Image (tube, rainbow, N blue to C red; front, side, top):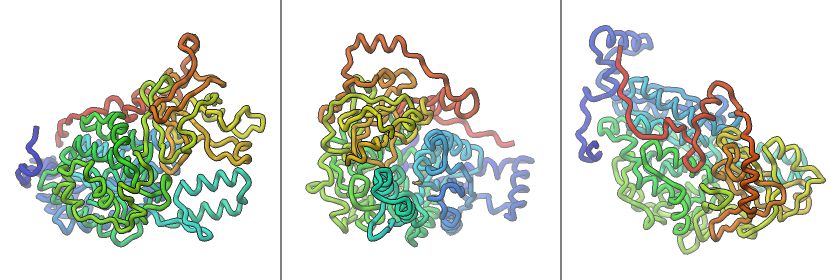
Length: 581
Ligand code: FES
């Protein structure tokens, strides 16, 4: 076990990882110097200085990262000023908007790529540049497995959408408008105008969706410069934050302050607590469990259950609230929010500044107490998320109760089953669909292995004929995920999933299902003998992939309660440094 960071001696030049490459004796070192000179550097430029990899998830398809090429230059400026040497390492962007079949399938791919990109290159520390939903956990998982000094630099949220006097939040406002469009309440032209107005600038989605949740939680755990997560993407403060991160990472290398010093078990506990107060995305459970697994911290769904009962939602940001990330930032941001819930946090955790979380949030103020509420005046009286267990979800399922219809939290109704997403699309708007507002819509075969990749199909559309009758919410159940910007009484991540034979696969039309949110239960009210008969006749569907990354994914992905990491990656431990030839 290594010494605590504060007691660790400062690194010497000979200790720098990059020196394995640049000070290698004989032909090996000479070859590295020759190649560095090819790029216009002198040999000395890379000797004796911390080399900082800027791991960037920019691509033209990651439109919410469109400003990252400039931010890379801002980070580089800070690194040069502090006496380090920057080196950009592009990794895949995992664009939430363009990745198919689902971005989730590529989170682990990104995590593997980040880990191996750090391992194979002569870097002493890394800046992790991302923010779109899967990029944050993917970058952090990879860096955690390499356990080098690292700072996560969030891309920042886009500016608020504006349309005809309305303020629009990415995702949340468009989902509502889309339902109105399907119900014929707004025209094609209005729908198109509104969609365009909702994404005015570069930057990540500006609601408390998965992107903002994950950047906020990584900030709360101390892996970003404190308060960085809410700085708007287009703000000059964002530019300064980037160059400051560049300065700081060089010093972190000399201090040997690594990811494992920051992302400790108490830091994850803090993240879970903050998640409840933020009304974070349901996806955060999967990502936090996966990130923690890389460092050997056993974060379980029970952590979320416990926190959910003691910490109310105080962040009044869409989809559970009414404001957006920009408002959250100017109300004080994550530091102010953590200050309000400080009694529930471990303030002794270490941040990338080398100071404790307590020191970093001391003096943080709330400047708008409608955006960041007090504990006495919460947005929602309990934590946002509730973990349900029962005969339909033996290993758990998730409901974001703060974004659900409060009249549906206790509900029993007959199942209306869709075998898969294609079946859902084909039948949901059929005028003859046998559905009432009391029906429980069930979507099968949409889990980690099933879909594959557990897409964000969990906010099943309300059947058109019920929309026309004014119905906007129903109980919906699936083994899929849901966008963090979505809302409704959607029970997600049912585990084990139907594709591997979980009870969800056995549900038939008309089966009564009981949702008991107060009792944290989800039950299929069918007798065990009948379920045993169905189980016996159940035939596992054919795998989606016979080869390639898809086959690797299906063979090794773990279930939602285990974070959907790959079984061979979800463990701590170091791999020996490569030999330099
Ligand atoms: Fe990238 Fe929402 S699409 S953050």
